[in-house]
Image 1 (cartoon, rainbow, N blue to C red):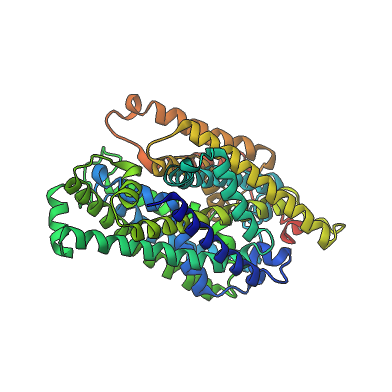
Image 2 (image 1 turned 45 degrees about the vertical axis):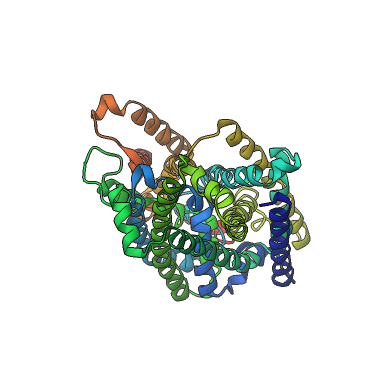
Length: 491
């Protein structure tokens, strides 16, 4: 299909987003930018969060991994459900009780000011790395499919995409994102379903027949029972639970949407309904992965991994399906990138710069600071996307889960210590503990063959990381709860 025609659809889709942003962003202030005035509709938030949770990496990497790992990823998804239960009935009641704008304010009231800053810093690091990895994957596909034919360099493509995101998030923030995410999730899921039905029809297979063929190729295996394997179902389910608990429940981007809902009950309904829909959608993505490999076999092509879905959709399907794929891919890209930049802006402004704690700042000055930070994170995203382009890892979903394991581990340890113990900590030592834990994890994982033989740690690195942080905090703890920092609660 003509790259120019594809590009025109991309521009048209973006203009629709701008219109939505224009309508929803009217009268926005800092409060609506950060948490949507706590007036978001829970059903819209739940549906939009499906798109945010999936991202372009799920759209491309999950189907691409089926030939190698079968349906093993669904084991992690089962763990997701357990994690969402913990978020709904443990974390959300706490966040609503404290009326938080930044969830890391809890660490300040419970453990101390440096603990608060440390938690925020690890979120900024993790979300920056994770979001730019997701952004890189989709931008790279758009570059190869469309922009190379115009002679536009990769860095310019990335800059254009980031500029598009800035244009529709600059004013409205979370208030706008709740609506744009809903639109984008709808387009992404529509693209997924259309591609599934097209391949089934082209192969002349029904649902049951396609599963039989996938099974004969070894694609449909879900549960892996070798305890030494990184895909062992216990490891995957436990890891999935803690990945959700940290990457959603202790992540400002995800939780700022949840705490933008009117009340706790609606927020809990939002999380649990989203969890069920997410499980179903991921199962469809895995099914699509099996279909893609069956289709590739029929066509006689050997492409695999992250490249199989883009290659087949853009080169071996009718033009209309190619357009649907591109729109769906962009719809998967924007929710993960726009929400990340908005959440990072909120965290940096509230937690690092303390603009809500500084009573001398006018609302106009706060807005100016927030906009400057917003632009700064866009520039940082451009830098990190270029780094990922240089590294060029073949499977980004593995990279993202690894980043999460190392950077969310300290957050898991901090929140667990605050909620499961009645001890105070020597706040000045907390940053050292949180840096030491992932470094020890890296040492353990690098030498796991010597330490554990054939046993593979896999995604349990996250749990080990959190446990080491927890133990480190115990070593620098004392008796009794620390004094609440009332000034912190204002943020």
